[in-house]
Length: 423
Image 1 (cartoon, rainbow, N blue to C red):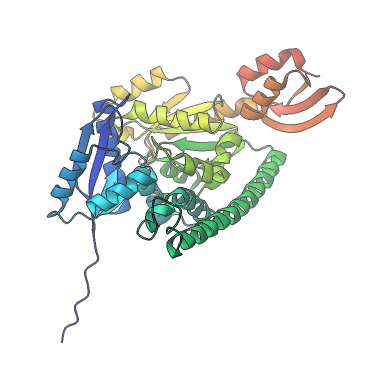
Image 2 (cartoon, helix red, strand yellow; image 1 turned 90 degrees about the vertical axis):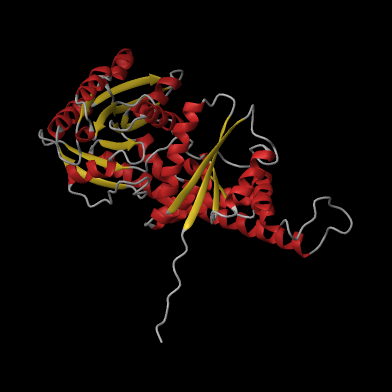
């Protein structure tokens, strides 16, 4: 008798988007295309994409009830297992939609969390993902227990459902607290590591960019690292730091970071702060851009938005326009390099233009070899904050009402500090 193995279940998803408020149909189209890429990265087959135009999302179903009813009818015979929404759903919306559609309902945040859970390899990465998942889950626990609880409260509503719900909430909150303590320990460890780098006076360059822009491929090319590099969203989550020696013998530490995304959930940014602090503490940002992508400008804006949220704006930045080997018209690369100061065009896959990148990196870091000393009065707190944000503080001590600082600073800040310079 031949034993037949059960076939592996395959996710079949329908994607739902809403054009509302300041969201144009072009923005929605781009966002839905990205949502489809995310669904594919998570292992789902996209069966259909449905959009609707409303003044604003509806409270019960996010989309209109009539549209929700038509989706229910359309998925019956199409073997759809998941319905994925392009925006984050409220707990009530998710509960109502699952009841109506009788299918698994996910939003963009849950989809990204699922991808992150698949890709995280280090203990730190898994801790950060679990924390983000639990923070997302906590306000939605009622959705899991709605079949046991009553909505009105009062007499006749107290029972095992409500009791178990409170137990689950307490357990989740306790686990969140433990994870936050463990990640705080990770942050302290990283801070000690950064202090060690400062003692060696090695500048740190954080490689940032939209997901799948080619950051890991570039790091592998420059340093010989073996970071996972694949043509899919969020191929690698765990940060990697490697040493690279420039032609002038100066050593620089290159740190690969998690890819950014439009509508990147705030819970993820909060959970990944232990990792993303590498961006805010870096001396230089290397912003890798997929120049072959049709939405290159929007992706650059999305990265800039996350950098501002991390309080890393204003840092010296080298823009690397990658994947020029995929361009049908090479004049596009020339146009972008002319448009953006401190930029180069390369192909990290073929190595084309990398010598220009190395020269640009050496020039960008040349100012960090200068050791400058300043005496700042206490009233210059804003300038002090800027030094910490965009500079590389080597020594700091206080004398009377002044702060004596020894630091490496970018040229634009050196001019501001000239009145306070010390011999």
